[in-house]
Length: 500
Length: 126
Image 1: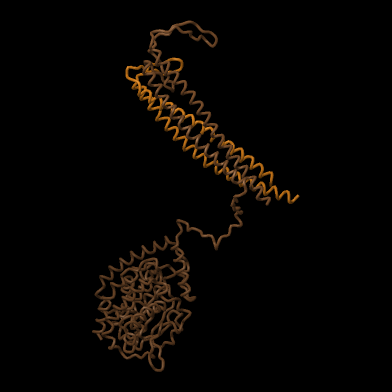
Image 2 (image 1 turned 90 degrees about the vertical axis):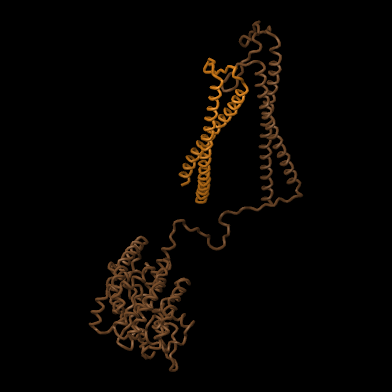
């Protein structure tokens, strides 16, 4: 109650103040109007005088002589007036012209008067309104609805206050970091230390540039040595070599071309071509290696995923595969398989395309080969970091699928030519060892001899790459590069088949 | 604590007052300019009324200096231009000052609150 009363008093005070101010304005207007009226009257008189002045040639007048004295005098030049225009400007003109000037002035004064009158009326109306307001509020018949504004503390906000993004924040960096974290997790403790240090963006881009350059270089080399490559050198083993090399040199952050492959995760689009070229560069060494152990090995390496799966084929070939890659591969392949040729895995034992690899990974249930959902799932759950699809955009996935389809296309014809390697053959149990780099194993890869093996590697590598790319960084767009590769690869396949 | 605050408050208040003075000064200057503008406008209009036969004088000090009508017109026009420019200048100046004084006011009010709080605390302690 006291509050209300105080509020009323306050309101009264305020209304009084308002009235006061309004009154002031009105009074000021009135004063001005009076002033202008006087000016106007003066001008009227002047106008009058000017009109009558030239009537006679001269006037007998009493000339004021100082403030006290007058002197008798004569006014001549009755039609000659000097007018003060203002700002110390004077003009000598006839009485008529002076009249015109006076008229002009009068007009101006009238305008001023009008304005002032308007203002005054306006404020008078306001004064009346305030009086009405006062009356209304004093009558008490009307309730003043007012709501007290609480202090800031009492303002209740729902949830957290939103904070705007800073204009220059780089959200991408976060994703990069996240990815790296994921990768590190994927390593399962077997860190190469490569990604342990987080590259700054500048470093990253510098690296990308470097890789691009390398890629170009290698592309050229590749072109030069392309024929040789097609002749079926053991690129698979070369890739293995590559992997080893890459592994060694990873800590140095990949200065050579080989390491570039290993570390080229960020350089998505260029990767695939790099892989191919990388294989080429190491060819010679591969051959040497082959001779050494007479065991062609297919290595699929990715630096980020240290886990490798070694696939022991029934023959003398070992397929080494980076676990992650395989994982992703299988994913894509699975999709493919489920969709189109879900039961074809029986007869496909020969690895002539990436799809085949998947087929090799089969669980046997009730004596029947059963397509495994994921190559790695049953064994090393903890290692299967995350499904490829989860990380890659759907478009990427689609792309991959496309590739797979391409491959499988060619695949189908020679699938029945596969050497009879049973699914059981594949030491699937070996997979648990996957974490250790060169051990893991599952599935069987059939490779007849070094020559043909070269082809599978290529074919496998092609699809695998895109997955790597996607997996690694979604930020860089995966180009259609992989799409370009398959046909070539396929043709190699055919070559392989023919050789067989 | 309270004393320091008071001192600060005082100094801020002084500054604020000074600023207010500046503002009012430039305000009055602007008003003067406005008056001059109207005066010169009138002069210009009346010069237009005059004919070329009329002689125009400019009062410089105690003497009336005879001027050409066209010349006078040009001079007045120039003067108008100048006055307009000045008005613009003062306008921006005033805006600036307004902003500054607003900031000052905020500072002052916050200081006052602090001071009051400090006083209340001091009283509570005693």
